[in-house]
Figure (spheres, helix red, strand yellow):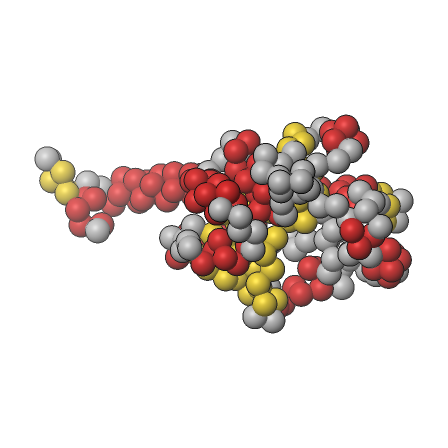
Length: 232
């Protein structure tokens, strides 16, 4: 309450001082909530592309990972890459490259949640956002909108939706969800929506930017994207 802010041992504080106190408090809260680590998920096997390293495939003369870095880096305070193959190639982009800790019994990758797990273990900040390496033009306000919803609802996870369908690799999560994620993966579970179900989560509609979520799964998709304007 402003009344309690203005009352002190020597009577009410000047309104200007109250305003400064409120501004400082709000600024501190925003500062604490604004630090976000970003994680580009590039740890898959590219099966639908013939098991090529998807993030290193060229689109308009640049690797897919380069497009994602360009669009995602301005939204976060730290940027990491989740990858399990050609680690040296990804390291050339000057970012930390994180192989999965969790693997299937035969050594196969365990899916995007394993990438998120590695990211949570390594990230510096209390919030971590993810995007996949095969969506070259992610929304410029992705992290901002997810963060606003997460903080407003005091949720543990915020996830993007398109047309009511969850986009499970476009998430913002609190780092302190790591123990729950580790236990979930260790139990043999892999579905992202199953993990969210055990947490407080909020869904954020991006119907107004659906085109920005267009992904590249096949070489045909890659050729089609060559002729697409990223602004549409």
